[in-house]
Image (cartoon, rainbow, N blue to C red; front, side, top):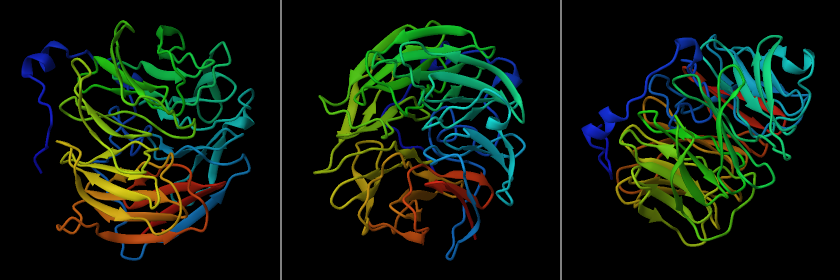
Length: 407
């Protein structure tokens, strides 16, 4: 389908800001799901893999962690291994066919602290980058090699899912006593640049512009900041809400469209922002509804996002103005909190809510209503996002359990 765009970036802007790529080994892995929300723009969409579309999906296997609750989603290594955030393990590798643990980082020395919501990111040569509550960003090569660690001073919990740029730069943020430190790290663990965004940064994965020249991050759960990737100089900032920051468990990661438009969901609504000056194009608000997870971006530009309220609803929004294409009323009590939707190559949308996983037809029923393909109640409260781990294989977590779903 043709991409529906609220903002068209000129050809001159695209050609004038193109960045050069580094060695292939330093780039983001070309795996099924190498980072938070799949790609450098946080779209939450796979263009190659199909999810289980039912009508009667089943649980293929479960794995119960001994390392604590799972609050970050799974990523996938180049060889297909599931890289699982595991609380105090803090990460482990699992066979996608059986769920069996293949390796565990805690078995190999000094990585002992708690990974919280920092979903790992993986480079093409297999380095795994993740943050943790001991104020460190780690580079780990399984099964047993610690490449390096960088310690953030001033009590700098690293709860952000890192992003690996085309040249191998690792982007991550830290709370650092609510000052909001934002880092670009070289692949060898040295600091390329750092800047201070001026607000707490939790559970936010930085997103890159399509040309790689700008990186976006939210801070204080209400401000979108644009930073030049070459210099670390802030180019603009936009206040998206006047106040009210939610809490550290919510996820306010920015999402970037092919034309450069940035979409951000925060406590008060969903906003579209143009990339040149940071001007807000529109904001969608719904009465008594909070947005505690980022949207996913369909191939045709449709935004899919859960709104928490009484009742909670799942929305498909038009990217041109934020109007509702269709919505689904959730019948169970609960919130879409740190549980972004994901999209497969056929436009099917998957999301976790309360104790259930849902699959929707991305187009709805054509009359402004949702079309549910299936639901699956796992009996546990879902606190993290889903991953398309292989064709037809959906992996999610709840509490200490890792759960694989297929047709």
